[in-house]
Amino acid sequence: MNLLIIGAPGTGKGTMSALIKEEFPIVHISTGDMLREAIANETNIGKIANHYISNGQLVPDDVIHGIIVERLGKDDIKNGFLFDGYPRTQNQAIDLDEILKSLNINLDKVLYLDIDDEVLKTRITGRRLCSKCNEIYHVVSKPSKVEGVCDICGGELIQRADDTLESLVNRLEAYHGMTQPVIEYYEKQGLVTRINADQAPAKVFADIKDALKD
Ligand code: AMP
Image (cartoon, rainbow, N blue to C red):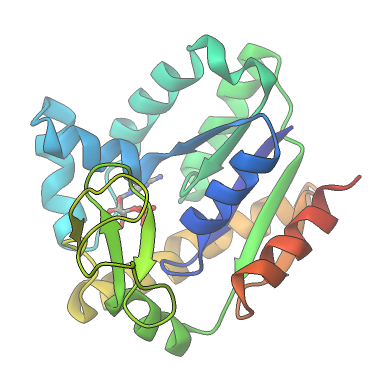
């Protein structure tokens, strides 16, 4: 299965991707995770990306193109992949079509996590992330057992630099302006399944599994 998961920041793409990865033998490819890792490692890409990410803006398409081509060149994508947070612009979607065509790979489904913007504000400002294993928590809806410590690996829980209200305003603007057209692009190809993401995570995942049955 070759899948995309698309939705505004805070819709639960990361949480659902982790569950999908547990259930199906496919690799999870998050451009956001890859960029944050590049920033932490202070690579050239990380240095470019840092400026955009901390302002809640999209990283330029040519930078994203480079990391996607490199990632799709690895062997582990052979059993299928789940792109999370990519493509985020129509140009990226067209570019991905071309890259996949050159590799003789088809896209099977686009999971569109749909939710109201107001709900996202509460979700985003309470979100915490393990600095080591990327497990996602929320101070109210999914707190860790010990405050500030990851239940899984003991890593320190941090707040993402771009999970502030100021940055969220820019990110939602980028989402509605740039990413919404991507959903329409894939709707024309008949690939989109809309999932109501304003439900308990277990119910959202049950709906995703239903969508993946065929
Ligand atoms: P995410 O973890 O998916 O919310 O991504 C965090 C940030 O990384 C975004 O707000 C963007 O600044 C950047 N980013 C991630 N994926 C992309 C992409 N496909 N295109 C452009 N920027 C991206």
